[in-house]
Amino acid sequence: MSINPDAAEWPTHVEELSRKVNEQLARRVNAHNRGIITDRELYLLVSLLWDVSAGLIFESDSRTLETIHAALRVQLGKKK
Image: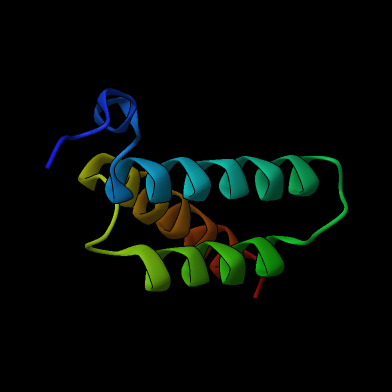
């Protein structure tokens, strides 16, 4: 059995999922910055991204989601 040399250059599942999570995070943060979605909506979206990807993406990307989530939680707490 021979292995296709191009297959060695394909991204791993972790790389691909991390890329997609980061892509979606960037889209949502951009929408938030433009006023299209609220702090609460971004908080819920970041929570969802973390819930579906924790343990499946690079740890650094999970930490980024956790940091944004914590900052939004503080921000939402100030609004109450």
